[in-house]
Amino acid sequence: MTDERRSPRKATVTLAMATAALAAVIFIVDTVVVLDIALATLYVIVVLIAARFCKSRGVVLVGLGCIGLSVISWALAPPARPSAETLINECISIVTIGLVTALALHAQQTVSTLRNQASLLDLTHDPIFSRDMDGKILYWNRGAEELYGFKRAQALGAVAHTLLQTTFVTPVEQIMARLLREGRWEGELVNRKVDGTPVVVTSRWSLQNDNAGQPALVLETNNDISERKRMEDALQRAQSDLARLNRVLVVGELTASIAHEVNQPLAAVITNADAGLRWLDAHPPNLEEV
Image 1 (cartoon, rainbow, N blue to C red):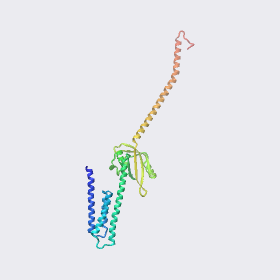
Image 2: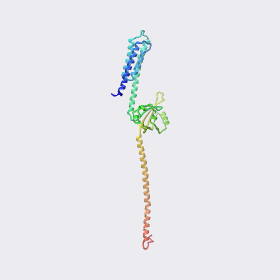
Image 3: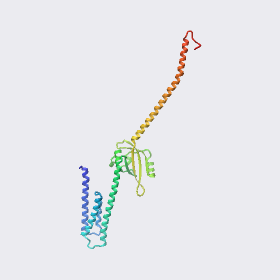
Image 4: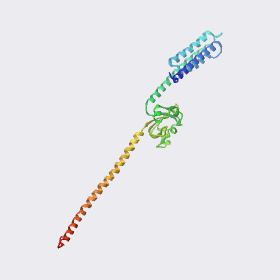
């Protein structure tokens, strides 16, 4: 077993022992000291701490145990003069412990759901991250780590467009105006990896509002299209070269055609001139043919 695995387990055991000791202290004080307050409500601290390292069943058992300790403390040291107020305090303690236990279970379920959703986002190869309205990164998935090279610890809290040195094709003010108006935006951006290498991405932004309806965060999903852009540029260059070659071939064909059209009458002129020279060289010269 590595030191990394031992350390969290040791911390959990230490926290569990401290929680048990706190419950024992509350039980002793609640049993020995007679006060006019619902001292047993302090057991909610035990439940909240237990929710940090116990599963749902463990939290329920801790909550029931705290209620049991409260009842036992009442039984061991009942008030000398039980009154409606003391009974109400005891009932308040039990109800409070039960309510906090239920809330802790609900919080655990919510956190578990969020963790599962985050783990699903980590399965995708596309970079996905969220940021607040000031641009500070709140979530950074594994796909973003693999593409850009920034680890989650490096990215969280950093300003996204500063970290990635984003180059906007469209002014960012226009992008944000459309995002606030329509709730989403999609377009091309140029980011840079941790080593400075540029990355062309198709970026999709989705706006998330808070309970008051105010813009709270932006979820950004990027798709690396650098290779596709390189292929498109190469294809465009090839098409340009082909068009230039076609123009050269057309000029060559036109030159050959013109040369052919000029050579034919010139050849006839030369032939006739040679014939005339031969007739002039005859004895006597054939002036009529010339």
